[in-house]
Every structure is written in C-alpha cells, then in structure tokens.
Image (tube, rainbow, N blue to C red):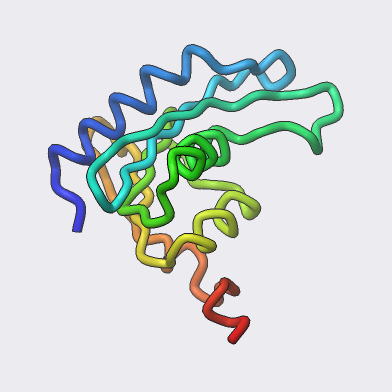
Length: 129
C-alpha cells in the first residue's frame, strides 16, 4: 500500500516534470512519476507529434524510463494535472501488474485508485499461460 508521503512526493515529481512536456498540439502539459517496488521514482512527460498516433503519453514516458533502468515491478504512478490514464496506458501498466495505484490530486488531496478498478476485466501476461 502506498503511504501519504509517497503519494505527495509522486504528485510533486509528476507536477515538476509536466513543464518539460512537448505539447504543441493539445497544449496540455502532462507529467507522470512512477514508484518502483524498490522505492525509486522515475518521471516522464508527454511528447506530441504531428502524426498523433506516434505521440508518447507521460505515463508511457515514465514507465519506459523505469524499464530502461531495469525495473519491472511498480507500486504506483502519479499524474499531473489530475486525470486518469488512457486505454493504451492502462494496458501498459497492466503488463507490469494489476496492483499498481493511480495517484491524482483531488481538490488538493492526494487520492490513490487501484488500477484494477479502472480496468476490471483486464488482459495481461497472466492470461497467456
């Protein structure tokens, strides 16, 4: 379970990196910070392209940074500004476990929502056995 301090720290990291986003088209700077099972934090921001399908969500950016550092187990991911991951990002997170918490700022207070509530009938690696 994620602590209040971890929620607050993750939200701050997500907020901090959101200013680095490349969001020429949507004008929506987004940041994400993911907490590994071992307690390390990796951040990422959205990178939009003129061919929208090739754009990179902040969540994907943060997960990719953590995976590149050889992490495969995650505790939580925070998003700034507050919103929930898109379908592709939900699927990406499920690849690493359904027990990841999604952390957002809800009216000035950190709130954690389990990924399994956002994707109750998920399909992941465990379904391929």
